[in-house]
Image (cartoon, rainbow, N blue to C red; front, side, top):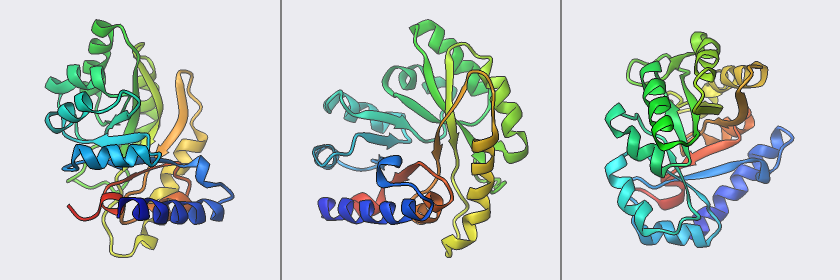
Length: 223
């Protein structure tokens, strides 16, 4: 089932990318492994998946310890400051930098561990009270502020779109974030990743400019 799901995902990503003049190789797939067993993760790895996303530190650490070091782990959930040490140590990219307090904690931990912390700025594109992230209107100022942290390397933007039954209605949200992504020019900020798109909406997100999607159910099936 996993191999077939991955084949279908690649086909759908390729079609969506083609619509905007891109290709499958321009899209990074992050396999979301919440509640997914280590055997399934390893199967995805053998099929060529290299990026894996977790949103709970306690669940992620045993998997990271048990699986090959070639896996790139992304932290994609709301990060509490008391978990910063473990996340900086074990994750290659933190996609959910959603507040200045967290930026300060990551900077301090980066200094302690003498390492650069790769982050994406999380933007609350739907202005939803239930979601974390910087407001769209403050995203550029937030990027300028975070760029001053010597141990943080901003590599792009991340968003979780509102859940709508018709993904077509999400185009304005994705388009707005892409505009920020394409126009920001701040020293120390590398606009490498535009992480938007999940199982419900990833094709529309890719058509609107996403180059990184986070897929769990589409790849591993219903939990």
